Image 1 (cartoon, rainbow, N blue to C red):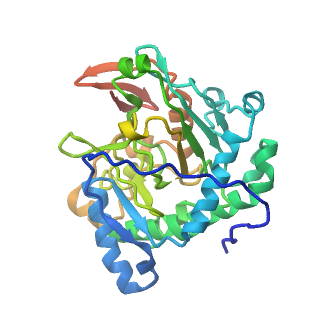
Image 2: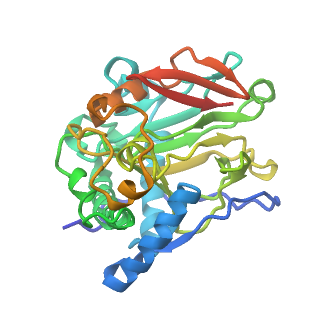
Length: 365
């Protein structure tokens, strides 16, 4: 059973920045009350809502997910530690080896990813495997590894698994079809990462047209983001318009990634999203993000679940022949090692592409 958040180790409070007062064009995303998933009737209704949200946008909010506002605050407090309480020299000691190993564990230091026109990113990540014993961590973070483990367990069992059951119902499959592919103790690279985005110079903003992270899809199955007030996240709507994702206190922002699109035969699409410069009244704030990036077990082949009655009725959108489907391990390593490091080919209309494991991966400027 998931453990409770530790309140034993004292921790300085991270003050969330104020919300923006700028009138922004927000995406109209569904709000899913996950507390209703505890009854058969609630799951039946939610499965329809989640299915429709995934088909329309690939993004939705979750409320009543089991964390109180104080527990969520504690997680932001812990998430700030690897950035505010670790020196630059120590960060280098725990830097990840993404290009060499295809693993995001450790720090993704600033200016590792090329954004555009010679400008590199100002995003700093600290990525922790759901098994925190996989590697050593900065000294300042070690007292809070119990919090990180509890956070990973809560998201895996109390958020991810209920969502996967709803998505399976949407495919008219047994409820645990997708859950069985996402073992907590199995070999894999599901992360509980933190992200700190720092303001950039005017020159860098002009060169990149205010884009901090190009439009892309996540490579796992489901991404869980804890909503925070500093704007920047946008999704590309089906009619080709970028819209902002609104902050909702103590809500989660959920989206599907490549692996879910592959497994669902294109029924649940991996949504294109990007990060841009925050609105003008938030541009002096650092943007702290807390995520849970989920993936299937490493040995799972990402072939369509052809036994789905839904897919049998409507057909399957394939990105590769089923026999050539990559495993989760192959796909995540290919995407991880290439992202922000490879030479992209312009295909026009603000779209750039690369080929990973025989699959065309697009990026949007």
